[in-house]
Length: 81
Image: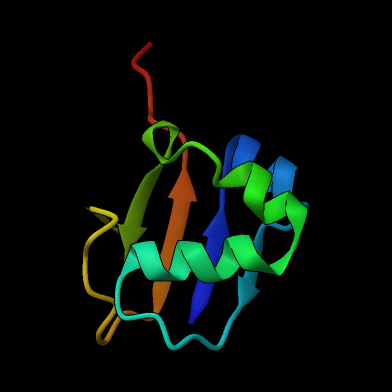
């Protein structure tokens, strides 16, 4: 599964994207797996209310299933301007 990081999420993790093998069934479980990797992931995912997630380029929720998903993207909320 490809995981993409945008804006300050990318800055905190230090990667724009990575490929991961996961046994997670939901986005929340994936986040838990990532948090357990290293402190930089724990910092990036410390406040999920400050993050949005897209599954295969469609905005989704953290309780969404990962079944069949090929790409997960994490990013801060977008603002207008």
